Image (cartoon, rainbow, N blue to C red; front, top):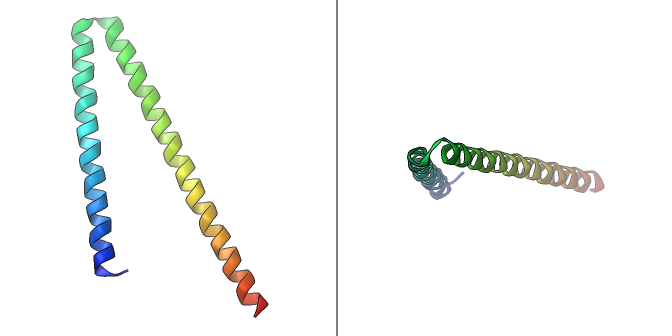
Length: 85
């Protein structure tokens, strides 16, 4: 891996970490506001956040499976090409 690609990857990781930190801070603020409004509002916000987290986890899992399938397909294609030679 080239140095510029490594730097790019590190920058992407840092940006993602910052995005998650900002999102987490926003979620905490939303929970505090909801708690001031009452137990029901707090429970509703908490449930909404749980749904969002579950959806994000599912999307991440699907993406990992997609990448794994692409890698297997590429490996199979390369194997077929090398056998054809």
